Length: 494
Ligand SMILES: *Cc1c(COP(=O)(O)O)cnc(C)c1O
Image 1: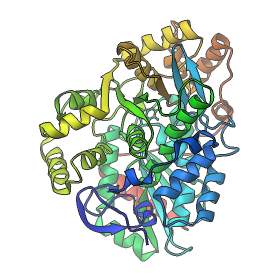
Image 2: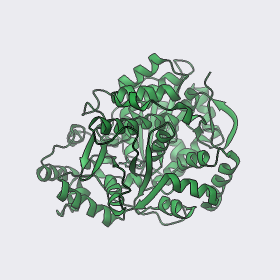
Image 3: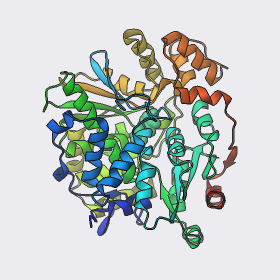
């Protein structure tokens, strides 16, 4: 029943939502997609009268029809409740003449919680047998790691292993990960960039020897990266809910289109917006906002995706990505499901580091997506003037979207900026942006200073790090990642 998901690179074999969630990535290296999203349209009038949780349930039920209603209800209620510090879960606030959709009210203060608070529950329901063991592997550019650890820690028969790029995440992000408790967790810094770590994880999924050894012990591998469809689908909900909030507050007339500005890295967040559009949400444009690693700006402008460029470390590390994995799904949908074409583009990307799409595909992409980028200096400046003009302190990732939004002439439609992290996750850079000298200051001293300046209070989960113990100090090279996974598997399922 419901075998509707198949690889972006082949339509031959289709699988259920549960299978796609527990395996993460298709065996040919493609990502799981389905072809009937427009038929899954939500009734907007009803959505506008619903809570976030009700809308989330509706989205999940539409796309994961192999789950029972009871399973999905239980997943939603376990995920989106007490762990969030705002009862609206994803509050929309005014920001100057525009709006800001706050996606950072979950336990780890970044939008990754929206998906990673629910993914563990979806994964548990997805097991073939209730005693099956799953080892979840994740490469993180900073925020996914902690969100995955917080979601999966302590869950029976699931292990979680996180790799982050050594010295390329913020102090607070690193502390959040290395202080994570739980017998089923592994955390390791990798010498390299996020892209290296992600490539390393993808390679482990193809490591037949390791997979066989794990399988002999009843363990299978899965992924908590945004390539997992179980992460993508929950993110569709907040696009609908943001729209509903604006209709309820009379900022929007039901049926009118809105533009979303999305700080983008791996293209998961913005792709969920595209899925919302396919499912009937009146979306004008989705604007892909990049930082100095502006591969996507170039791609959307020219049709050439070229990862062969210098990697730039920025103050928005969760967007320091040169290979945006989820773009593959958009290419699939906009090429009318041409798996062979997508596979050939991905082969070129792997072999030559670049590919160019045909004109027809490029023009379809440009119909849906706008784009722009902010340099480090521009995002810093956006943090400063946004605080001066509106009294709202935004984080460096959100600031990238803010700069792009302010740089673009308003299209006449209401504009919603996705706020993807709490500024307290990046206290030193935010403080410096406000013109204070933050050099040599610890993350916590910077947090204190931000509290004084803004009159706001740091989220409890971040202040609590002050007194927590570092539990994970492993650092490894890319080619030693498989070994680390082996070790974690022994500890997690001892
Ligand atoms: C992950 C992340 C992004 C990028 O989201 P993608 O889905 O990878 O495009 C932006 N901002 C923050 C704070 C993030 O953690």
